[in-house]
Image (cartoon, rainbow over all chains, first blue to last red; front, side):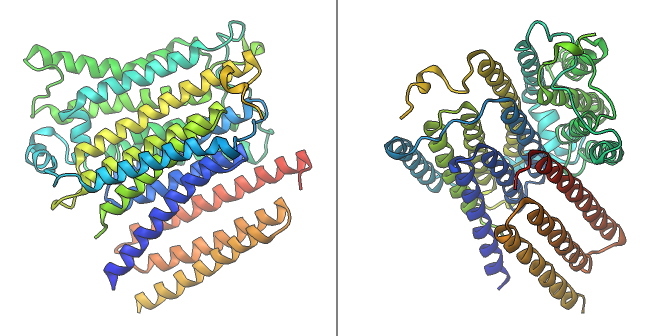
Length: 311
Length: 104
Length: 93
């Protein structure tokens, strides 16, 4: 009975994920498409929970639904009115490509060989990694090379976003000027939420060594806190030329690289000695959390746009 | 216990849906949205494949790869949208020149 | 006993969600839809949380569930305000 209910729930959830994806793609209204994409990401986060991947569920909901949704809303507001969605005969080639690739992928998934999995290898070496959460162990010890490059990708994306700023706006505050009514609802929200959000962000960072959570989830929550503060008008975003801002963005990858180089001095680049692994991982994560938060928040806000903000 | 096969097949459907949107839409915002749908569908397939097999815990290596992927997808989307906004302001259209001629 | 309370409360909560969803589809303009969405769904979520709280192992879990409800209430109230203000300014129905 219980197993039947669980299977039913999984089927309904999968149907919801697929339906919201289809609606987000197919709906005519562009604003509606963005809303449906956010809904789709939240359902997907529930799917990750069902698969037992709590770390991904947190990342999907915070980054996929939250920040990506915000980015899409921001771009929608800045763009000229939407153009008509192609219909009629134009649909058929796209439908054929979609059906073909979907069927091929489904067939490939069903014929996958019996997986060996790396669960046992990770579990066997977890003792030397310095942390108890296997996902954090993979991210910051076993495959830290990926994570180092990823943190540099974040920086590169921010540089890319900034590089499309107009010359006369460069040097000002990033993003559009916010117009929260003084003393209004949003202004109060922008003062009420940040302390709670900050606490949750720090908790996620601290929990990451033993429970689901970690630098990326915590950094995303802190970035969201910063965005709420800016939108509510409690603080204005710092000038893009501020030196401390750039230092915050670069500090995470720099500390990561420095730890990696000390590892190289004793044999392996990015190798962590088991007895020092925990403090080193925590040090990297602590700095990285703030760098991720700053880079994400600035990437989402966008390049400076208002020449009058140039002071 | 949850059967990962459902989610793997759901991922395949989602990737197909995303490709449909990516081919169909001429508005670049909708294309970037479709690109995100394709990416998350691939993540779902990868995560479901990592949960197959006798060991019921989701594969931590696959999980770490997917988290990395989600962050990189967000960075790419941020860059893409910034380029799109700058392009649309310069050209007056949110579509690529070769698509703008297709109007019925 | 706790199970019976959970079943009852969750069913009640789902009933409110159903009513809210029907109202969002059926109501004619933005303001009444917002009214349905925020009020019915917040009460529904409240009943769901009370129902789940009866399954909790410790008071810490109950406190976290209450925090979730409080944050959801706050977010719903504030978004409703912002959407209503935007709709008023644009004079959209």
